[in-house]
Amino acid sequence: MIKWNYKFAKVGDSIPELMIKPISRKTLALYAGASGDHNPIHIDLDFAKQSGFPDVIAHGMLIMSYLGRALTDNIDQINIKEYGVQFSSITNIGDILACSGSVTDVNKRDDKKLLKIDLNVSDQNKDNKLIGYSIIEF
Image (cartoon, rainbow, N blue to C red):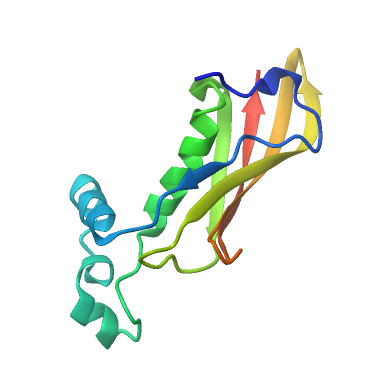
């Protein structure tokens, strides 16, 4: 895979969008097993309905991991100095996610170049699931 050449990035440039296939119960079960997060809101339909949801909902950290993958698919991990998100909406079964980001600042510190990338995960209805940022240094 050819990575996005962030070393020449300027304000307004975007990282390649990462599309995530529809969220499924299988995905949530696999994530629960791998992460140890067995909160019933993510895996137990009856519990989710008792909590006021029509179905189970995705783990927020799963969605954050997809966004992290959009970064590491395109930026050498050693250059990612900060990564933070704010959860803004629930991700449902069947949601198709788009992970994206755009450069909002380019600076220099000492002999290093710093990029600030504003990040976003939204679904097929353009509902923001996560907003965040990353600082890249090289």
